[in-house]
Each structure stands twice: as C-alpha cells, then as structure tokens.
Length: 508
Ligand code: BG6
Image 1 (spheres, helix red, strand yellow):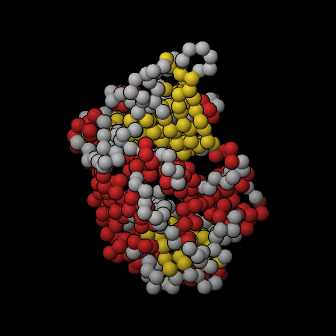
Image 2 (image 1 turned 120 degrees about the horizontal axis):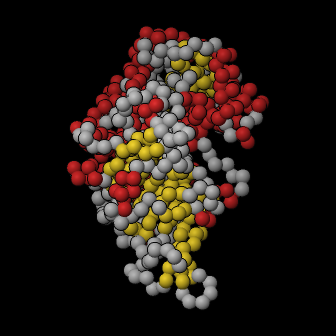
C-alpha cells in the first residue's frame, strides 16, 4: 500500500494520558525512522489552553520521559515537535467544530495540498458517539466537504455493552463514516509478539497436528500489570477491567490462539477467522456466570493505595480491577478445551503470556524428579516482557536410574541482538496511514465479542450479591480465582521474579 504524500493527523484528547504515554512516542518513532508522509502535521486538540509553542514544549518534556532512552535523539525530537500544532476546543461542543474547519485549512496551507485527514479519538469513551456527529455537521467526515480522504481511529472500548456498541456503529455508518474509514484500534494486535503467534502457528507445520482438543488439555492466558489505574480514575471507575481489558485485548489473544488458518493473509480473510472464533464462543450459562468468573478489586497494601483510595474513584466503588474466567469454544478443534483467562491491576509483576498446556502421557513410565507425574508439555508464548517462546518437555536426569525432569527449550527475542521490536502503537498508526485495516477490529467482531460478554455485565448488575473479592495490591488476585481453576484440575502459572530466562516459571 502506498504512503500518502501529505496528511494532517488530528488528535482529539491531546492533553490526555494516552496521547502522552503512547501516541506521541509512537509518532516520534515513525518520524525518526522516516515512516510518516513527507508532508505531515499533527493538530492536538483538547480543552486545555496552550499556544503551539507551549504544546510543543510540553510534548518535548513528555517524550524525554516516555520514549525508550536508546531512541531519544535531541535533533529528531526537535524536528518532530515542529510538526505539532495545537487548537484549544471542547470536543463535546458542536459549535466549536465551526472553528476547526478554518484551522484545518490553515494547516493545509502550511503543509500544502493535504490529501488525507486522520482523526484519532483519544478521549473518554463517552465522546466516541458525539465527535463523529460533530465532524459530520461541518463536513469534516466524508471525503467530500473539506477535500481530502478522511479516516478515524477509535480507541477501545467501542461501546459499554452490546446495545451501546450497536448504537455507536449506527452513528458511524449511517451518519458519519463508512466502515472502510473506521479503524477500531486494539493495541494488542499491534504487538510484534502477538503477530508472531500467527507465524508460529501458520508458518510451521509441526504445531498444527497437535493444536486441538486431542492433544491440548487447556489454554491459559494471563495479562497482568504491577501498576494501578494511574491518573485514569474517572474513566476506569466507569469501565472496569472487563471492558478495559477482557472484551478486547484478552479475547483477541483467545482469537489468535484459536483461529483457523485464514485462506490468505489479508484484511478480510484474517478478520473473518477472528470473527468466527468470537461467534463460536460457548454462551455462558447462569452456572458459568456464577461459578466460572471471579472478579476482584485491589485493596491497600503496606506501600500501595487500595483502588477505592485512588483519585477520582468512588470510595464505595464495586468496579473490578481483576477478572479471571473460564470460557469455551464450540467447534471441532476446541470442543471441551477450557480457556482460562485472567487480567488484573496491581499484581506482583507485569506479564502477558499464553500457555498451551498439552495433555500428559497416559501414565507415568518414569519417576518424575520431584515433579507432578506424568508431566505435561507446555508451550509458553511470552508476549511481554522477556518476549519469547518456551517449550517445556521431560528429559532424563543424567545418571543412573530413569528419573525424568522438565526442562525448557527457549527462543528469546533478545537473542536476535539489537533487532527493533516494533512499538505497537507505531505499527498500528502506520498501518492506518497506509490504509491497511488488517490489524484493526471489524464491527462484526466488536459486536460478537459484546454479545458474549454483555451477559456477564448484566449478571453482575442484576446480582449485586455476587462478590467483588478484595486482594491486597501486589498479590496474584483473589484466592477465589485459584480455587475456580484448581476445582477443574488446572492451575495458574505464576511467573517468578528474579529467575533466569530458562527457568521462568514456577507452579502455584
Ligand atoms: C490499555 C488499558 O488498553 O492496555 C490499560 O486501557 C492497560 O488499562 C493497558 O494498562 C495495558 O497495555 P500493555 O500494552 O501495557 O499490556
């Protein structure tokens, strides 16, 4: 796909956390590696008052903080911030958009003949429905109106549940933007290691024969963080972990692990297969809702605040900061194989990984040196940090007798030397600039995912007696999550700190 020659990117929500921590560092990297259009400007837009110069200085300071030290280059930062302009307006105020149009025309003159406009909605989700309507009112949506092609990137969560997601889709297509203009971003798909799961599965023939219910006992997916909600109390207290992580990032990981090979690697075929996985998720029964989902909320520890003490959080909040659940996929490949997923804030470490637990041998032929016998093979796909893949298998302990012990065969990205692991946001923003929607979520997938998860939200709403279990900040979540999985004969694998790469894991 060809890179457009000229583009103005409008970041709505330009003084927020996402812009500071993710978008500007990603755009800076694209600038540094000369991957932006030749004529490019960024218009930051939010309510806070800044001059262009004031905004540039603010972003310069933030880049120094959020860009990896090895990527910092003063000269490049200097030239990057001169791509920035700022316009103060309230994105919720429809009249303010009347002034946005002349501002864009001004930028058009500066960069010369703008061919493309890209809007990035980095605002609270409550504005996702209003902004496209306001843009439409002043003709800033379609490719007509102010001339130039228009695209819009919308952050997750797209909707609060199925009904609101459908309403939102309606606003976008019926009124303001066509599907091919809408890029629903889920930055997990921008991660190199997530994309590599596709290569692992579909560029190798050895995994396919065992990648099914005949050989796999269960799949475990963990994406946990050792930080709290930072400055995002008002967003998070409304959203909660199910909307913030599970309905999008975790279910994407399920889809990539479970999908059938697409006919070809292109946007439609790939997204068709993702959609099929979502459609095949086994609907949750009342029993599943009550017994196979555990939600938790972090409480204070010696050194950390509890969730309810965080800024902008209701002191009586029942919003979940942790979710663990079991789900299933109704198809021939996966029938009967449980997928256990969990995610939480303020856990002991930050890690995202998928562990494929293979079935053990039918009986133990050898003694298993101090380990559970028979030992099951595991394939650990480490998404972050220490990106890599580990295969665990049994090996005879050298010496007399026949003791067997589990060892690891590792691939670690770090062994590739200084190879650049692409920043997820940089990858996705660049794809959008090029007009490639493959790694963005299509509306049918968003809706199918909400169709599956909305009953969970409804169940929690209708049954306030369902507990939100507390867990002290810095622990592995509520005990009930361990009980939920162990009742089924499985176990969470908790990564141990301070172990070397070849010995990353210890059982609970
Ligand atoms: C975001 C969530 O989408 O993903 C955050 O809104 C979360 O709450 C973040 O912290 C985690 O992303 P990553 O890439 O650090 O795993």
